[in-house]
Image (cartoon, rainbow, N blue to C red; front, top):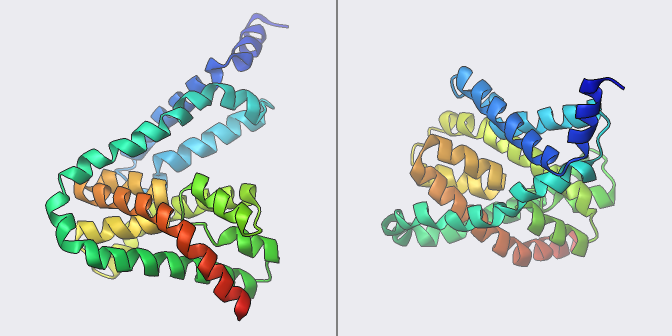
Length: 240
């Protein structure tokens, strides 16, 4: 075994490998994103995921080995989510004015997302378990997986759908707003938070603080509301 190979074997077995790989891939993705002048197709999170998957596949490194180091970043998701309250505080005045339409938007958005996911998948010939796994695709992953398991879906498949939904929402959301001439950042933020959860929220903060604040609020509220509404959506589907 060469000296370089020995070093690589040691590093890949170290818990710090996952942490270092995640940070390096994300920094590279951010540079690519800026070089591309903020093109949504070059979303840093999506690029980071692709880079990490390529490295793990290329060197035959298990996900468990990678996550033993990456779990340190995973732990920070909780504090980062709580920290979303800070930019929202600065939008408190506007939030008081729009809480009624915001509530309607959450209920309608979550309901439509569940119904449309199920029936589109049914039209395309998906299995019943796949359709059930798709219903909570627009909810943040931990909540979506719990809803999926309770309703008869496959939690791991739901997690994949959640990531795909977030990436697509973060990439095409801005273009959708331009097509429909939506200019209010609070409206755009709610739409991104409800449909594209964490990735949509991250993309919203890249556009404006107000959009990011409302996206974070919508993401957090939709996670709670989804646990109540989506089982009702499923019961209505089963009755039809």
